[in-house]
Image 1: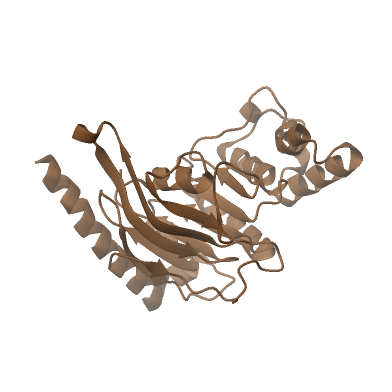
Image 2: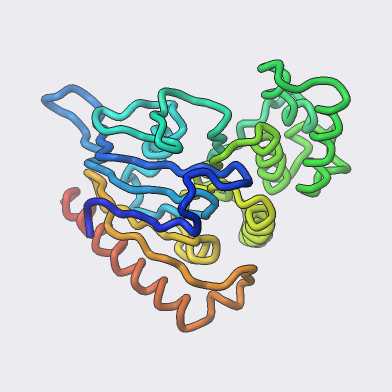
Length: 280
């Protein structure tokens, strides 16, 4: 089902009391290369990400999920269409949208604490004891209270991801954008990070846009599951995931979760086969 997809928010307000924001894409298209040999990546993407909800995006490999992330973050501009946050156009990167990437982006020569406070200090918005107390409180919350003065190389992959979450949250964003943040972690670390991330989401209820290639992860996390097509990418469908919160992995063995997975896998398989057909 291509075309406009609207996710109904739990609130009629565009901005929730906790500072979460809605993100809206209207007819967003993006291509790369010269006009005579262009790579059409996104085509007329129309979707709304509701404030205060966790929306997960899945799609075939290479369909442009990271391109979509870069456009919502303001790192790239669409060729056509518009991206809005609370009905205001996104014109570039800003602290209202924080991104956690596939690969670690921690500054290697700074300690965990120095990485976390870097943004607010550079902007001159927070300083002194107040900033120190806030950073230390966040690091304790993400389980890194004993690693404040460690450098990234001294942290495990899961710890680095938690440090990046703290670094994003200290900026008080209204939208968190997660671009396959647990990719590359071993199975146990990934499972623990998913549970930790859900606890954090349910505590602060920030708007979260989470990209993944793992269907089980998507269903476990999502309020809403967006399934993308093969390139040129459109929105295939939006599934409302009605598993109760708080969640645990036992829910993935239920009939309801299995149906969500079956429906999503069928769509993704069809789109992946189109990609293989192009290569033949």
